[in-house]
Image (tube, rainbow over all chains, first blue to last red; front, top):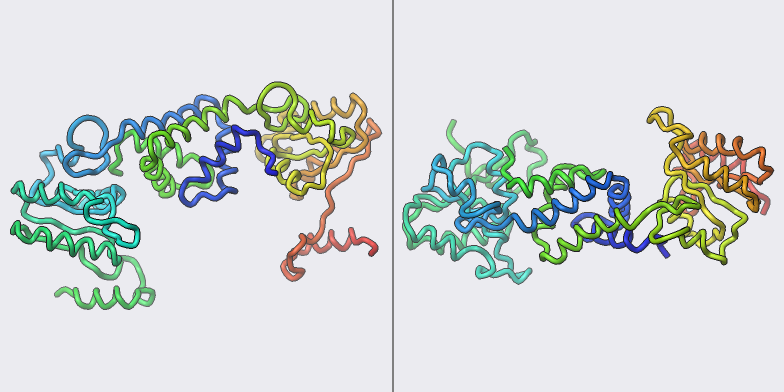
Length: 200
Length: 200
């Protein structure tokens, strides 16, 4: 028997459901929450409920946003509305924004095509992407799904789907990550880096 | 700029305050919470508030408990009320209970004496322990603080404090952990194991 009062056990179980959090860590987190001042614990609880209610998908790009209408990126007149970067996940938008080099719009698929996990094209926000491109005004669609099998397959599928619209479809470059060591690069990456070599 | 809606950023910050959770993990947890069904997210939020309000310290042993009066251990007629095991933390009670070998009561100090962290004897539940012993009926007090410098010092301090009451004060045995390898045991542990060797 694990000797915990029910309310504490309940809290531990909720923490243990989080990804990457085992039972031992969950216990540590639960004890930490108990040690918080009442108002901080309440604020934590509130942040969960509030995030769940306030945050929804942008009707245009499907990225997470708060408030009415399209998200800040889609609504901004400073962004280039002729370029759409297609990513699998809202986290990837954050990664792209961090580079400060991309000034176009986004489209978040919320997943990749994955027959193994029973995720087909209809489970993703693909239809709305095609509609955006079909509506005109888009010059280029940049595929920025992850460079793994499923991300690749999804990008290929979308490229074929967008072919009738005479829009330029591109893919993020493969290569050696900046700051890494050649000796640790895998064969596939090295091959792609060689293929994509550029004049200097 | 990290491109997060404020409510999501707020949730990420709350997760990032938890011990051992960095900003990256906090983001992953926050996205997971967003992906939960509304009722599960609400249940999670509620478990935090509820644990905070429902759980308090047992007036006798200071262990965490729910509801009115003393905790289940203190109230149980099946436990040996003549023995008190002194631990630093409620987590340690769980560890002791797991052994299923201890049938006495507990006393939770909620910390150890630690001048480095400005924790003195008055910051711990030491006075209530002395009162319990002074009230009589206690035959033995077992020190089960952690076997580190601060745990040791706290146990020594308490042993001296309890000397006037003619109660037996003991300490958990030091030695090689069961199932471990001699070659990995540190010098101090081996020395203690040798000192505490028993006839067989």
